[in-house]
Length: 461
Figure 1 (tube, helix red, strand yellow):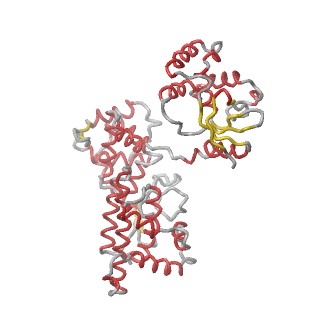
Figure 2 (cartoon, one colour):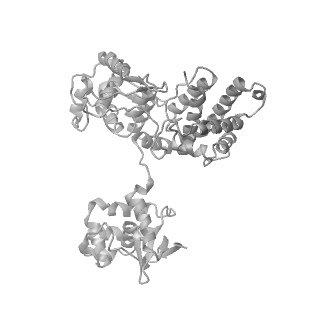
Figure 3 (cartoon, rainbow, N blue to C red):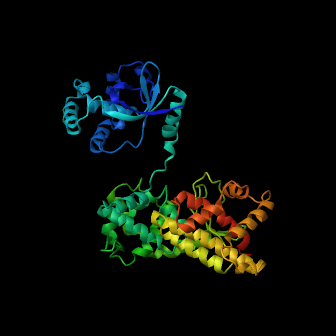
């Protein structure tokens, strides 16, 4: 076994002098020198971290310390900052001659949580240093494979935890209001997505916007405003934020308009009369791909700049794609298309609400069943009278689509399903019975496959 899991007292754990956080000259330094360096760097936020340790001392450890057993001593490869915090709390005398103020604070905190050198930390211990390095690679080189929350997700969390501020309430109300605007989904998702949402909120949710447009929320959390032209002006603002300039060619970026008076001046000059220009640019940017799918590609007016909204295209499953069914489908009129539109509407309005995921999962099974019934109505009317046709339909789809696999650029997820590596049928059954914990990632990946199946059989001619 490469690792053993043990609880170890902090007095038997040692800081790693080869830690990338330490300059070369700290190699072979004693622990007090290493602690002195930690405390000298404000960006390590060790003092703040110590406060968090004290606040959450009653919580079980979420992450284990990764320890290399060098045969001479137990060296912490991953978790040095945490270990430093615990060691300082357990032995404030380590900083008595470094920081008197911190020493006094540590003494009071030590009494508050009753910690000493025998305090136990959860550890993963290995004699293989290279195996320990794998954790360092994952956490620091790959960001622990985590995706940081965007502003809409942060305010949603605050709301659901019941700690949202008035500013968070405004942001939530604006998110909900923007999602109901009659703008293409690509534009709405772009302005509320990574790269633009921070700038957008600086314009529409801070003091200048509240003052200019009279923004507030009612007792139901809905957005209210005193400027009757605000809905039209909001569309113009969205357009300008994505273009990074207004129709006069002035920069629209809070990095340049970085003071409230400047932002307020911009907002006061936004004209609802510019909305027809926005609509005209959107219409001009619409295009139809070879599959008949309509997309919006709203680029900047300067052709040297990269387009702000790129048309969706098939991408490998490893790339992030939050569009249900993988892309916008152009399906033939009928039951399948009607249900597709309804599911998409539910998802678009509740994209950041995990509570809706089980409904989307059940809907994926439902649309596959409806597609199966339409297929058999046309190709085998006798069979269409039976119940639960989706399994038979998927078997046929797998067989027919596999024959064209070499000539069609399917998503890697779909190819995996065609090769038998993905049990889509079983997952749909679990969604239907509600006996599986659903995740957004899993829902999306399965929807990508179903999207290509629907497009294969029901694409608009």
